[in-house]
Image (cartoon, rainbow, N blue to C red; front, side, top):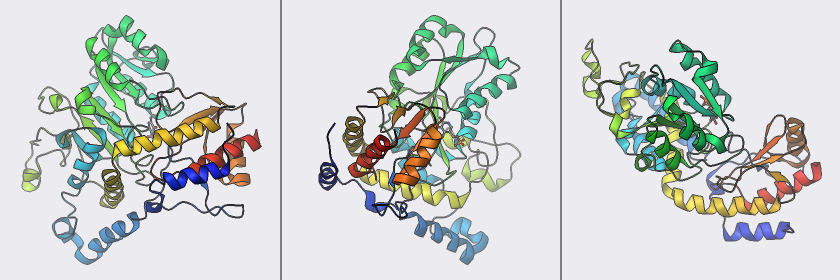
Length: 402
Ligand SMILES: *Cc1c(COP(=O)(O)O)cnc(C)c1O
């Protein structure tokens, strides 16, 4: 497409997004003061508000010591509760179904303790063949934990064949665990349809929303998803290794038959300091917590979720469709492997040497994009802060390098 730099600048004036709320890394030398940051699917940029929030929490520790548990401006004991409602809104869940805790793969394991309960004849876990490595390792280790051979217990199926596989072999599947948006191709799966299909075959259906949370609108409660987990450092801009989210559907919250690993943060907060030998968890997702959480990791999630609350996921999705549509037009001479049902990420197949290409994009053009060897370049115009001009720069740089 012959869209030029002025077109991109004009679109940015008409549809500016919220770039002013974020730090965009500088680009040394070159024509532009900032990098064209297309890697928010890997690590989101830092909101400007995060630093002050984090410093307040540090100051509370300096000024209050142990009394910060109750007396800090954001008291540490119930701090995680401040994150629950905005996180629930973001994924379309009830607050009772939602908790921010741990990191993503840890949450997947804790949820599989409850929701992967293999029985003879129904013992398989279905994942997509392009599952993220951490998820692949997690499900294999869960199978081994139950004394099963992971080579037979884990079924890896092409995304386009999952429905067909469930129709044919669903009776042997205990758990379907899929990425809501695929990390490699950027494909947005039909979460409600696959959830319903999995249920009709008697399987539990869980979703890894690492690339979906903050990227596409979600309605986990309404869709009847059994459980889900997501990280907060990609589209949720909460910083490297940020705390993750977990969702457990309401219908599972009060089940006495579910296994769960527990600690003192699982129990009813009213009894937490009664030092009782037996936990008395409430019927809420909080009961899946184990330890007292890392307080200095909470502020960044809170400030980030506040931005999502303010802007709203549906407005973000609309800008996302415009922005990603613009980039797709610019990339029409490349092999884009991302299908039309997508979030904001476009994955371009290159001839190979994706890692070397990403270094050239970065150091010759100031474009930050994410390579997956051998041949995929991932470009994610993030609707909160990416510009049309970033998209134009990314497409021009790709053209120059290839
Ligand atoms: C990013 C990502 C992870 C990362 O796992 P952590 O436990 O946060 O290190 C896992 N799964 C998927 C699908 C991802 O995209």
